Amino acid sequence: MSTGSNKLVIKNIGQILSGKLEAPFMDGNCVVAVDGRITDAGNEKDIDTDQAHTVVDARGVTLSPGLIDSHVHPVIGDYTPRQQQLNWIDSCLHGGVTTMISAGEVHAPGRPKDIVGLKAMAIASQRWYENFRPTGVKVLAGAPIIEEGMEEHDFKELAEAGVTLLGEVGLGSVKAGETAARMVKWARKYGIQSTIHTGGPSIPGSGLIDKDVVLEADADIIGHINGGHTALPDEQITCLCESCSRGIEIVHNGNERAGLLAMRTAFELNQAERVILGTDAPAGSGVQPLGILRMIALLSSLGDIPAEIAFCFATGNTARMRDLDSGLIEIGKSADFVLIDTAQHAPGKNMLDSIHQGNLPGVGMTIIDGLVRTGRSRNTPPADRIPEVMQL
Image (cartoon, rainbow, N blue to C red; front, top):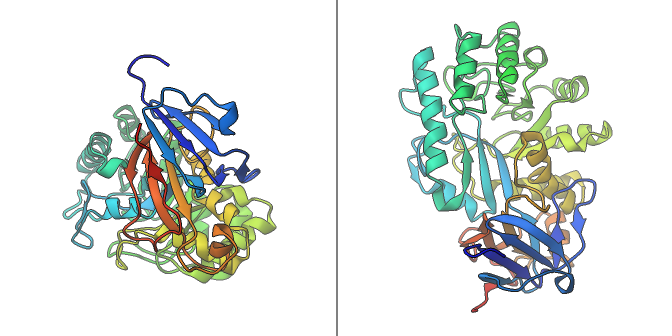
């Protein structure tokens, strides 16, 4: 280990959730990270744990990759004018979320809709969340809402400036499938990933985006396929799942029954790897610090799937679809973790069984880039066991 390296050792882990749909559990009881990257994972007796700067005794709890919220609407810093709320991102960290992905900074008062202005805002948004990470949370932002009149060179300029995301197609003036498809292709050409609004209008100025527009636009992510808030008819949801291979995003601030329908359809198609999770917060229904955990519990319990599979929707599935360096317990990936256990007095023979019964777990610690960010969550129910940082 080179001088100045920051080595983290997490030992006495009860079980490791890998984030991988094909193998959701990983053998072992120890994970090691150096300078914010995973360097080893397995059994402590087989791993070099010497010269650690930080040792965490997991005390038998479960380690998962940090949760990823695939659909948020940040504005600036850790403040949202949508609900006049401070520190909402920090609150979500207490719900296990270590990475957030913007679907557009649409709630900014006076959001510019001219092409020069929207590009400037997107670049600024990307920069300020790159430079400021609330409590260490990774916010991938700078997602412009596309408007009529944009040309290919606009997308090229955005990409060259560091923008990698489009805000929800359909929240601006571009609502026709043909126009949206042309702009989505330009974005894809320059490495910008796209998400499309799906369902009824969510804010003034947005409108209905039905299956025909979604299919023609061919965005990379079918944003809130269960509506944000208003879902499409069932037959349109199943048609979207069956007629393309794009990401199936299910959000907290949508229609829960429609979300279950989309998930079940994905399994029927043997395409569960397409399912990813978001909150679509901040929104009219507020901010949900436990939104991703609630979606995991809802889909597992009412959808009757193992909880460890539902965790993959919020970790590895999203990481792979979004090409992130987190969300998976793999050597070289970011050392972003959440340590969780059964909530005190919750039913179930273990933590995953308790979630399968619809209960939330307790978050005992979050770690981002190999640094401990929070201890016992102030938002989840208290966990039975709490990891602790050992004195060296």
